[in-house]
Every structure is written in structure tokens, then in C-alpha cells.
Image (spheres, rainbow, N blue to C red):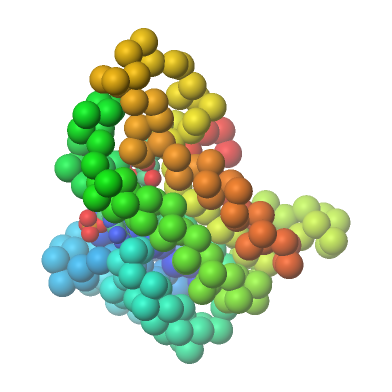
Length: 215
Ligand SMILES: NC(=O)c1ccc[n+]([C@@H]2O[C@H](COP(=O)([O-])OP(=O)(O)OC[C@H]3O[C@@H](n4cnc5c(N)ncnc54)[C@H](OP(=O)(O)O)[C@@H]3O)[C@@H](O)[C@H]2O)c1
């Protein structure tokens, strides 16, 4: 119970890596499971494992591969039997690694990879980890005094302002050269449609967190 069990998906670098660093330093008894596509080349994550060999476990997980998600959930079930916090931080802006706003540059393959990683991945993560989250101990997040409102676990899906349809609604002057929303823009709305159904059978706060948002 003390410290909590956390899984950070997409932890090789960026925010995911920093979530792991923060959790390990701030919660001495936390058990952190860091997942990434390629543990053998995730040098910063491996260095972190060297600092916290008892508290940090590194697992292979590509968010576009359902079998790897299922296998990771099986490992967590076997090792911990529960999960208190799941952070989906893995994401791609675009397979080219740069933002794409030109309709002429949109490709079916690029859209597929972006959606598979940013939108379908977190949904499939929820599918396999929800049973473990429902067994959580409420170790993370603000708890209400009213027991009826208390949660057992927290599921966080990182997104960005550019992923907001509402915040990117300015119509394009020339729809043939500038697409809004771009390839990266739809995941947040799609997740908002599906995630409530994941949380409906148990008190499971599900948050779309923008790093620049106040919560
Ligand atoms: N950083 C910011 O200031 C900021 C601001 C606003 C919003 N955000 C949001 O926060 C989230 C994370 O951003 P970031 O800055 O940390 O990005 P990042 O530095 O580009 O890191 C992306 C992470 O996602 C992983 N990843 C990519 N495809 C994957 C897949 N198929 N399966 C599993 N992992 C995969 C990468 O792993 P590999 O090493 O294997 O490529 C990497 O660890 C994104 O949703 C982003 O929009 C970040």
C-alpha cells in the first residue's frame, strides 16, 4: 500500500521519463513500472533503473501492439495484483517527427500511426489495466472525505493543446493548403468519447491532462 504502484507508459524520454524520476524521488516506497518500445536503447531509463533497482521495473510495451499491452498487464497482475496510477505518456506528433498542418502532406499511413499511438493505444491500455486499477488502494490523487466519492485509482492520458478541437477551431482561409485539425488533433476528443465507459463500473477518475492545464 505505502508508496503505491504506478505504471508510466512511454517512459524512454520526455515527460514519461520525468514522471518516473519524480515519482521515484518523491515517493521512496513507490513501485514504478516504466514501459517503452525498446528497453535496450532507452539509456536514460536504464540509468534510472541503476539508481532505483528495487523500485523501478522496465517493461517492453509498444502502445500500438495489443499483445505487448496484454503481456505487461499480466506481469503487473502477477507482481503487484493492482495498480494505483496509470499514466499514458507515449505519443507521436507525426511519424516525420515534425508537426504536419498541410493538407497536401497528409498521408493515410501517417494518420494511422498517429491514431494508433495516441488514441487507440490509451484505449487498449485502459482495456487491459482497468481490472488492476479497480483493485487500487487510492494511493494517488485527492480523496474526498465522503467515502462514496473516493476513488481507488487514477488514469491519466496526456494530451496537448494542439490536440483540442475546441482550441483549434479557427477555420482555414484556404482548405486546400491548410488542414485544421491536423493529423495530431483528434485524439483528445475521441478519448473523451470512450473513456467514460471504461470508468463507469467503478470510481475511476480518468483525466486528460495537458501539461499547461491547471489540474
Ligand atoms: N513536453 C511538453 O512540453 C508537452 C507539452 C504539451 C503536451 N505534451 C504531451 O505530452 C505527451 C508526451 O510528450 P513528450 O514531450 O514527453 O513527448 P516525447 O519527448 O516526444 O516522447 C514521446 C514518448 O512516446 C514514446 N512513444 C512513441 N511512440 C510510441 C509507441 N508506439 N508505443 C510506446 N511509446 C511510444 C517515445 O518512445 P521512443 O523513445 O521509443 O520513441 C517517447 O518515450 C504527448 O501527448 C504530448 O502531446 C507535452
